[in-house]
Length: 111
Length: 120
Image (cartoon, rainbow over all chains, first blue to last red; front, side):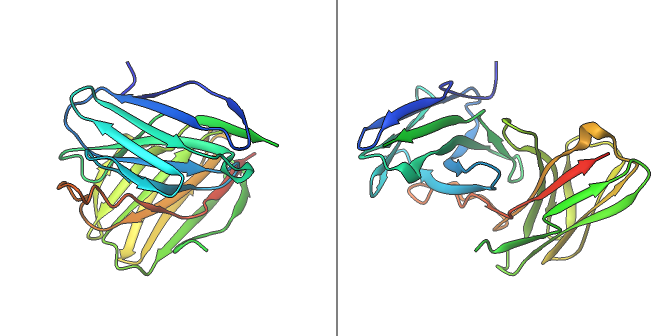
């Protein structure tokens, strides 16, 4: 079983749609959680850290359920510019900063 | 613009060549990383430096040799590479420690734009 698993993609949605990405992690020692965005042939960029209390940044909402070892990302009113691959990432306790990446979910927002 | 600068952006090298990838950051970060990313795959950790000392080597072949001359610079020396080593090589940096306590979550990394390496 992969340490971090994400919904397989690609997700093809129209502009203005709401889209949700799900992610599960297997190691209960995971301590920090992130969503990264990666555009084609570019580097990953931090989208959001994810907190147990949930957090929102504009059209983006991230949720963490430690009991279920589940992370989500909700994008409301999707834009063409949201098209990218979204990577679910966790950091393990005592792993010296090592980040574990999910396989990524590709999102394509169409006009 | 990214705050982690990688050079060169593209590199083509033969299997007998020796080349180096360079990475620089001026954010005062004390942890620096090398990742390798193949097409349609997530980044895979290669090396971690913390306070200029190598702290993690993910069983990377010796044809990849990292070096951290100071807290702002990270190099990756390449020698006798194979075609399957062709990939995007990403450098990243972070504050020394990923914060544990809520609600501040963690810092995450800042990635450089990468060096696209082709081995012929």
